[in-house]
Image (cartoon, rainbow, N blue to C red; front, top):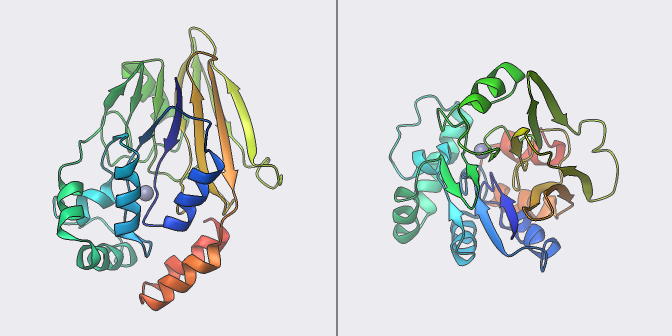
Length: 250
Ligand code: ZN
């Protein structure tokens, strides 16, 4: 089975559709690691598109807050504004869908999916000590996580932990950033990156393709029409900081 791994779409339908077009024919099933909505101008379109993929989907902190399951007290003022805007603009049916999304971890065909971490769906896993704690309790050798909006992750072989980072790669114009060959006996915590609001310095939409038979995970970036999304955000009167950051990928 080949899996399309999607995370942190954040109501950016232009980025999501660009990813789906680029990955067309290369996957058998998709998974979504949460944050379908929040920040972006297209919440209904993003939810409808994810629903149409019939994929294993878990909720993110934004999905949870927008559905009213969380008061978003730990959100910064800009993110909170977007939560309230999204709540107002989502159809009742899509709000209901978000409210019933499962929390991670969810087990899919030999790997695990979480939004933040295995222990806490709202935790940001940024550094190796956190990853070590996660990999110790990981129920499967491969866990896909999102939430940080940074493509890459961590690998543990015996006592050593490596960081998988493409910070020096992503100036490269090619779309396939890296093919990771999964080693027998190693444990992986892998982030496909954010489809709709990357924060690792590369503004292109991010995703991953995992082939469990070939034991490879490909990390991809595709350019999309950022300006079109920014114009819709302007029209929607979404916060300027959110509009600007799409262009920087920060
Ligand atoms: Zn997110």
